[in-house]
Image (tube, rainbow, N blue to C red; front, side, top):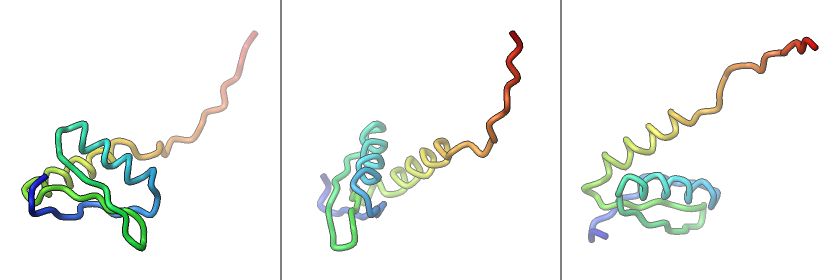
Length: 77
């Protein structure tokens, strides 16, 4: 990893930080998880900051919970 890194995401759960790291790894962005007193941080090389931010926000936008309400289905026998 580059000598110059920047934190692109902070989470209070280990699962959330690992999910974000997986997103970046899947698109070829080097990353490193670190723990700090208030949770977890995700570091990337400074030159990948904009790309990492774009990939994470796109992933979260695409994977938002559906706002559609379940439909009652009438079963006819």
